[in-house]
Length: 196
Image 1 (spheres, rainbow, N blue to C red):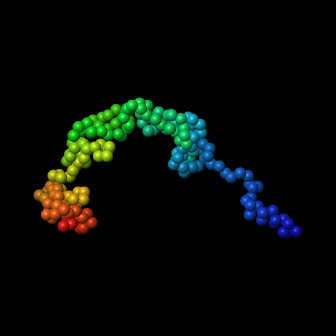
Image 2 (image 1 turned 120 degrees about the vertical axis):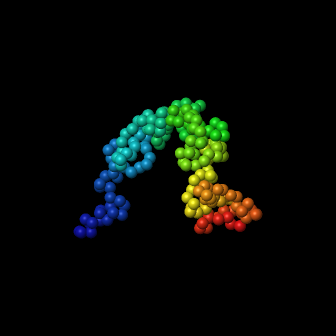
Image 3 (image 1 turned 180 degrees about the vertical axis):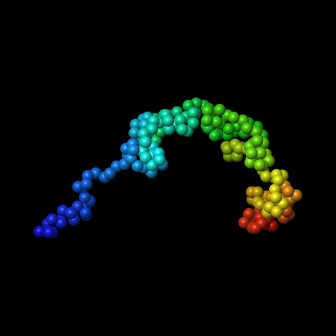
């Protein structure tokens, strides 16, 4: 008799009990969440996890968070944001205006020119110039000839150059010139040195 009463529960444990109803879903506004991804509700609305709670947002406000250059273009898993001016620059894109000036695209898709001397001075460095390396333009700076503490240890500048503090200023030297043959700078030695 006892076995007959327990049998449905044993079967329920083995097959999964369905008396409690469908699994609990927490995907409504106000429900708790921890997702880094938005979820489309339709072409214009998403659920966003903000402060660990699902909130409903329209794609226009989601795209506005990226900056004034972006507008909504529907929803595909999350809001699709497109540049309002497809022929304009992309925000934060950079290009060299000339050898001494970089132009950076602002949030309104307008290029703003900045002298590399200012960019490098803000970092306490000297200007090398604006260089375009593999399609990415940026101001390149150097610590060569900038002030240093006389007791500062030498350090490697790339693979083949060493920087030493001499008379209160950084001096760069090629390891090949120091060693008299092709050589590399070893950054793991203490202090760093050319590996002759």
